[in-house]
Image (cartoon, rainbow, N blue to C red; front, side, top):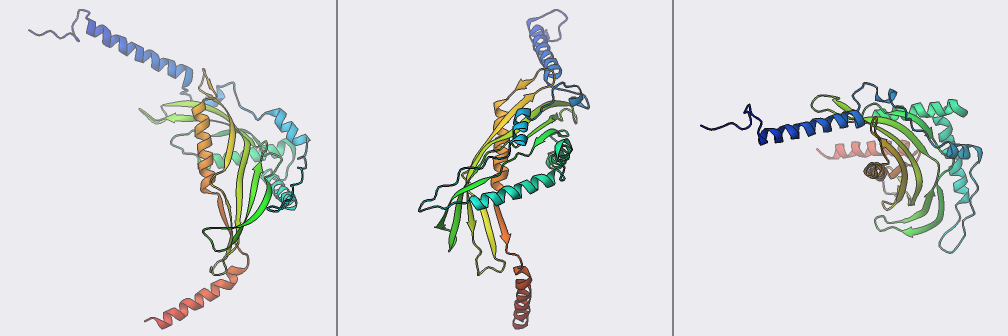
Length: 296
């Protein structure tokens, strides 16, 4: 007669091993649930930490206007782009002002914060991330600087292109909080709160301006960045509810990789020459009509 060691009424080694493993798994689940995960509907209301943009950096950027950079040295292969940098600074300042709804001080900061928060929640993956709460935004006070302009012959186009070196260092940053959603064994079973402050350290690249092709039906100027660019971000992070993990390296690598991927995918901007569409469209329609008359 065989004996069932697992369901025996007398304690056995197998029963003790199984109960011990179940106890460890249960304790581990309790620790994760209590220390790191958050099952409340509004996890950020129970947390005492809310990230903010470094106030010293913001005061420095608001009180001190951008220092005029040293004029670019001239040599045989390059020329100064000071005039364009001054124009670019004014254009960037206009964009900053419009993002703030032309308001100064805390009111403008709040308008910019709300717009960034609305955009972040429009593009977030709703199945994986909870609502994104943006706590503060710093739009910076500088602009990209172009220098070392030169003309060279491109390999893929039959014309000369203009190339600049680009350098951008600023106080642009955003502080936000959200939660990673665990949808197993049920939807929104648990949340892992994440608190982030992301700021720009340095961006360096080469910018190429390709002139329009006269043979094209819609001539356009193409502005593109080199795929071999340098983008360094500074990330401050806290992960967890009661017990928090600070500055997780993998999270920093993931954020920087995603930002680089998005920028590389949008690093080319074709600009159609204004007014040519009104000229080319009637010509294209006439050519189509003539082809239809000729072909049966």
